Image (cartoon, rainbow, N blue to C red; front, side, top):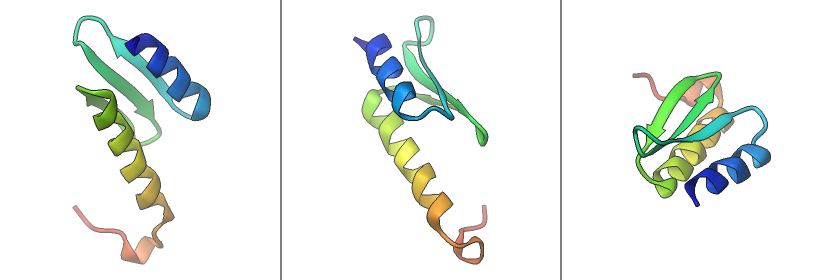
Length: 65
């Protein structure tokens, strides 16, 4: 099931590499901003949503880390 979720998500977001790690039992995503490990599918979706929202903000309104 997890492998199929990763395949489906990657098909919808062609700029990402998404996979299920057997050894880590986590979802992984690699993008232009780096790699991210998500323990659940919901966590992965939340991360991707947050990333997409931050790209929509004007540069002068983005939060500094």
